[in-house]
Length: 350
Image 1 (cartoon, helix red, strand yellow):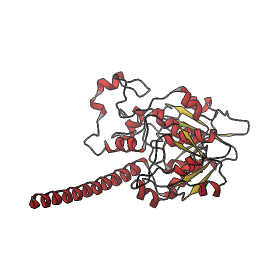
Image 2 (tube, rainbow, N blue to C red):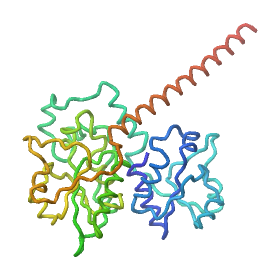
Image 3 (cartoon, one colour):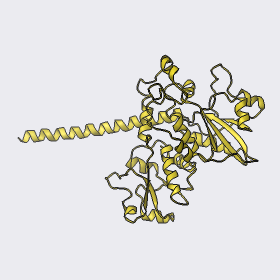
Image 4 (cartoon, rainbow, N blue to C red):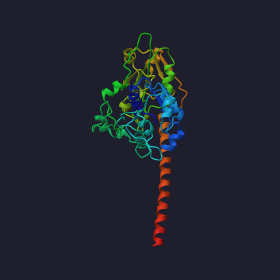
């Protein structure tokens, strides 16, 4: 997967030099060393390229980083997180570049990993479609920042991520709209920020010569109202960083109102409001959340050309995971059978 933890590592890496080339493995390499990839290599190439700190990608990068690879791309050194990665036979994949003194390290982002996110999605397969409406007491006490009375979110309660203002500052562009910019507003959950979102934002970005895209992110409880089940998978803080890391986005509204109001449009001096081809769920009172931009004649539907949704990704991941677990169980059963046979042979000898 590609998530904001990776973006944060790439941000740190970029700060260590002047030009950042990111090596992305093929599906084959990942399947061999780590297990089935969630996104295809083409999707991953595009996702990584969309992260604003990346200058270039190196497709099909070998799993073991060698001096030959660094020289091929004219790199002074390589950077990896402070978690060690091993090959299938237990060797450190960075041994050669470490020995040559061409290796640097950046810090992992606490509270997020692919394993952690997959775990959250798997909660959906358990009878865990928590119907939050029944838990009205919890709703009553829940403030807008997605934390319940016990300091954890009833929606993304499994998230261990702690947001700080420093992290937002590190991710934010800090650029204000300039004269002549076309200010475009898009709104949504942007949950598990994925290639469907990237394709949509890229298309929106192409609509103007000098686009300034503002993404409005809905609070967790709003997302849960229109998405249901256990959505969102990522809480508002995680979704904020995911979207800020995208090169097409200039600004994020954290906890945007569901209805795109006249106040919001005037405040940000919005020229254009865009929405993808996904269904627009009516507001709580049954009204169209895009009523005002439509009335002003500034609403536009944008076809990203991608049919990938967060739902499809979750299904893909769960399917992958269950196949992976089944394969491991089979392997374990086989190993146990072999051990049992050996034990019996030993007993017969005695």
